Image (cartoon, rainbow, N blue to C red; front, side):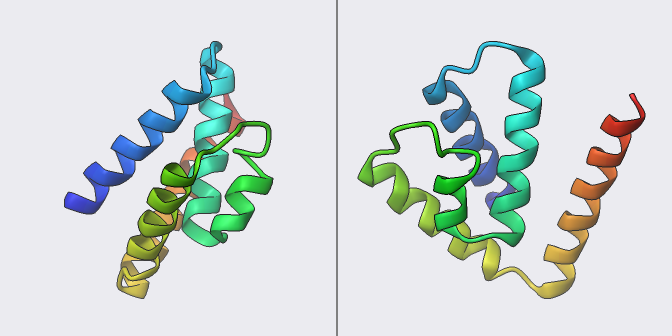
Length: 95
């Protein structure tokens, strides 16, 4: 639960800091952010969803630490999070 709370807090902070206005844009950004966070690298975060934003060094260090926590999850737990993300992305495609 602690990891989930941390992920949510970091994600909300990033969304707030980036100043995204539209709900649809927020959803797309958030889903891409989570996808890269789960299966990508910190560098891919800065090239992808965070590419157009100026991410300061403290935020980069926090992202790297968060990514390390996610990478430290048991493989089965990480796989289940990826499945959940795929399910959410699939339901968005149906809408």
